[in-house]
Image (cartoon, rainbow, N blue to C red; front, side, top):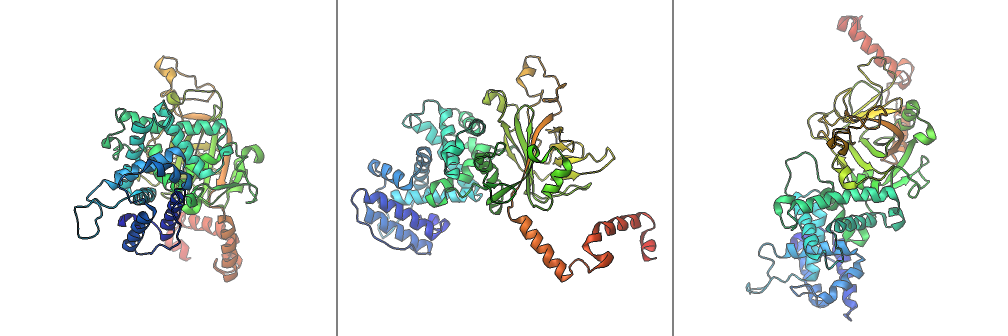
Length: 518
């Protein structure tokens, strides 16, 4: 309990106490007002006192308070069940917390204490604590195994679908945003990862080894999503914090209900892999259906906008892309840092396919750098040599990218042998298709599915994920120009920076230091 109070902010403890008081008031308990102390030990005593006052100090959860707590917290059923299981798991670990001189008494951990411990564990998991993440996922599996019948879910796969839907709803706070075919397909892909985790445990959900750290580079997208979002779903004040606001190029027009390629639920999912400062506002800076399939227009609209999310829809309906941690810039070298990633959201458009069969042929979700190299992002325009293909690429080597979009906006490729992001397969190809199993390899004449991961492009959209970067960049440049930070006027001004760079390159190639001195 002390550990839980140390993990949570006093205002969060007060919120939990207030809501528990509201639940107890439904049973006729008197309401009192107080404020949580900042010291973790005093905070624990504060919680124990409220447990005693509200009649929640029992060591076992009372069924008559469970519904009242769920109503007070407005917690979705599946999320509530997982938190309940997680609280029970944590409260039975170790020797407990004993007050007074009589150590023979049971640890005074009641409903309120277990709930706080569960929320605190979810918070630590969201901030990257692997041990708490493992305990949380095990609680999910145990809940699926033991309560699936009582929750009126006959198909265990449906449990994970409903849990993901509830987490997505906690982020969006609007059921209308979850009601479209593309969103349903995306959520089905994500839930399928949860079902795979459950059935890999032998169907019992009671295998610690199943949720232990895998030696494989590929991450389980379901585990990551639950670990990072359960904390926000558990507290009313936190709900909706993880969903970036999707806006138009003007930074004001809302695209929350008009985002055909990037639905709010997909933005929530991708935002979980972004720094918190990148989850506030995502501004759509380019759309090939409005700006045209022009690479020049693409670069003009993404110039100096900061971290950029690029989404590609293929001819057969797959949505994949990448995030560059810096503004796109043309050059012959890779750029960016470890905050960059690539992703595949699956086949969200086009003909219906079995999600289970389709998901087994490509690597769904977000894939981060493995540390093998620093080839995060690539962008080239106007090169005539075949050595430097014009377009935007992520990971791999030049000409052999994890993901590449050609400057003609007609074709691209996703090489699953590129190591930067773990050798992931972002799109199904002939080697992974069910057609191959029957000997009927799909033809590459149409360019839609190919053995080398090539695809045809239907649409390209780009978002500036750091919404106010362009404004801050402009203000910084104005200030630096006023201060003469670019070296003064004339040939030393920023206007001629590129010319000076080219001259410097020519000077190095034509005489070295002596030539430069002359």
